Length: 116
Image 1 (tube, rainbow, N blue to C red):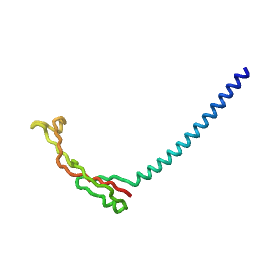
Image 2: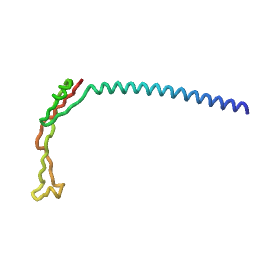
Image 3: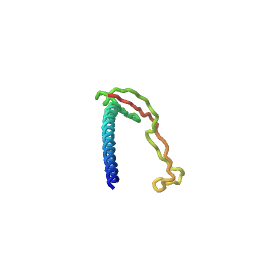
Image 4: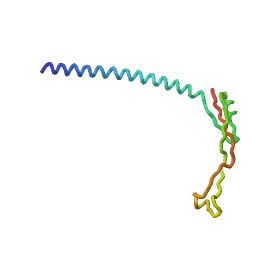
């Protein structure tokens, strides 16, 4: 009887000691991951992507604030859409199924990647 009590006490002691070590390791990992997140945030703040489409342009505001253009490219984009009826007797206000929408004006979208 006494041997079984000693064995259970030994198992409990080992269980508590092993659990304390695992939580200490987790705390170290959490601290390291927080440091990495803060470093990644600092890197992310130094780059920005700005898009202007259909004749808009306001990148000069960013250039005045100290940003530099690291990359610039253009993409084709639809600026406006127009709708017309599919048939002559179609009422576009009442019947949405007979309305055909197509691109009206196609322009360019300028994409700037800025660094600070």
